Image (cartoon, rainbow, N blue to C red):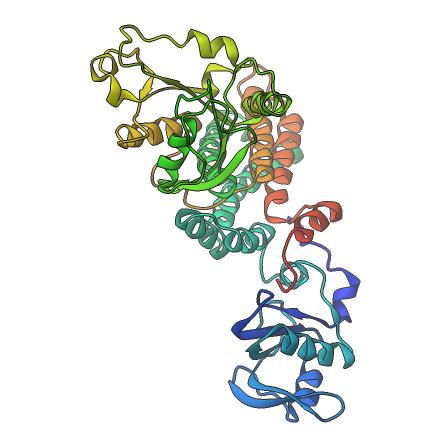
Length: 457
C-alpha cells in the first residue's frame, strides 16, 4: 500500500486554534503546530520552550502587556501529535482571554487552522492512519460509554490492526499467484492442489467476521432512529417518557395533544437511539393536527424502526392490530415492532398476545426491558456492543473487498485456473482495504472527512 501524499502546505504553514470548547471554563488551551511554534512560544513567553517540560510563564502581547499567566507545553517534532513542532498555551478559560492569546499567535505568523487540520496533519505525517484519525472525531462525539470505548479502541489501532492482518494475507496470496503467472514453466504448479482456494476461503472468513464487528461499531457510532406511531391516546408520549425516565413529552387525556414531532436522544443498554414521538394517526379536520399526522407518516418511512403502539382496553377480549396497520404507511415487517400498551388494565389478555407483540405498561414500567431487547434484536445489536466504532464507508469498503474475494474463490475453484483474473481480483481486495486506513484514498474523500471535525482538532 502506498503512503498518502503529504500536502505541500503542511511543509511551511504554522496553524493555531483553540483546543478547548468555546465558553467559560477553568482552563483554556491554544494549540499551535508548525515550524514557527518554537518562535511563537519564545516571543509570547519571553523564553525558549523546553520540550516536554511543564513551564509556568506570563503570556505577553506584542505591545508588552500581560495577557494571562499559565502553562507552556512544547513538543518537538517528530515526537508530537501532528509530527510537527507543537505548542500548547494553557491559560484561564475565558473567551476573551483565549481570543487575545490566539490573536497573539496569529500576529506572530500563524494562521487560523481549518476544522480537523491538526488531525489531518497527524494523518499526513504518518502519526495516525485514516481510521484512527476518524476515531478522534468519533471519540469526541460519543453518545454512550460503549461508543466512547469503541472509539478509543479504534484510536488505539485495534480496527486498523484487523484490516492490516487481512491485507497481509491478501498480499501473501498475491505474491503466490503472481509468481505462478511469472514462472509458468516451473516443475511445480503453484496454482494446483487447491492452495489458492483454501487461502481465499481464509480471507473470506476474516472479512465476514470483520464486517459483523463493523456492523456493531456502526450502531455504536450512528445509533438508530425509532418512530412512535399509533392512534391518539394509546400512550405513545407516556411510553417515550417511560423510556427516557423523565417527562419529555406532554401527556394528557385530550386526543391530539401531540401535534408536532418530539425528538429525544436516549441510550438504551449502550445503544444510542433517537426517539421521535408523533401525532396520533386519525382523520383530522384541524389543519395543524393534519400536518402533524402527515409528518408522523413521513417519520414511519424514514425511521430505522417503527414502534407501532396500540392500547389494551379493560373490556377487550381479543388483540387486534388491524386498525393501526390500516393507518400506517407501508412498513416492512423487519422495521416494525408491535407494542401492546396499558397491559396493567387487562392482564388476562396481556398473557394471550400473539408471538412478536411486545406487552408494556408505560405507567408501571412493566415490559420495558422486553421492549428494549426487541429493539436491539431488530437492529442486530449485541449487549456488549462492538470492539470498535466504524463508519458506513468502512463497511462499504469491506463489502467491496468481500465481493472481489468471493469472485477469487469462484475463479480458483473453476475448471480452468485463470491466474491473471485471480491476481486482478486480489488487487481489488487490496485496494479496498487500503481505502479504510487511508493508504489509497482520494483527496476529495480526505477533505470531506476532516471538514467535519471541530476546529482545534
